[in-house]
Image 1 (cartoon, rainbow, N blue to C red):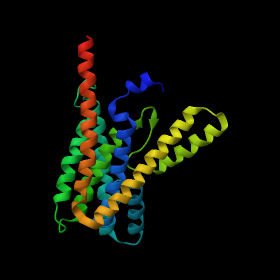
Image 2: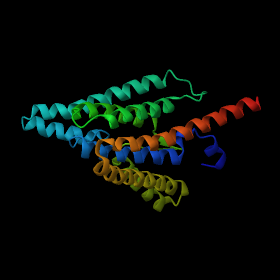
Image 3: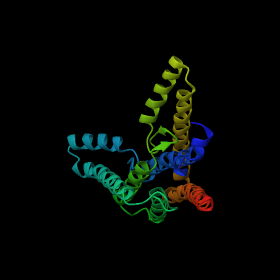
Image 4: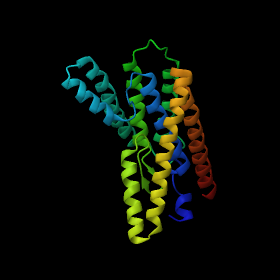
Length: 234
């Protein structure tokens, strides 16, 4: 991509926003695993595996505990995709802005929930957040990625590096660097999430709100500037 193409890129597809979203994904997965009963609220593959294990072993209540976040994730993707078809792009408030604002509000609620609140309620809320986030933030410039999991990003990074060695095309290496940065951000977020979860327990969710607030400010500010500029040029 050239500089002009990057300048025209929607703010939610820029690298710095992608890094924040990936870091928040790693943070929240570590948070729910440590403080909310060993459930991966952002990574549903693990929950599907645990559900299958517990179903086979006859632990039906535990199986239900893992089924709830999976269902919440499904509903979250469905709703977000529907809203995306109804909200126009030529405005400050887009589906990405709504997504982050909803995440912040619900994570404040989660962070203020006392320890006696059933874990299944928290994981239901957070899994819904995971769905709307991964559905809304799907690319960095022209590089598709997942901000709430690493498996696909890891595969794509290896694939791009192999193609670079074969073709020597810089575009493949650029994609490789972006995937590496995203995976590193996710890992860093998980490490920081572990630190805060062990330090302040349930209230660690409030730390993610600060990260998401930063990304919300940057997206809204950039979109407002672009809209004002387009009106001025007219």
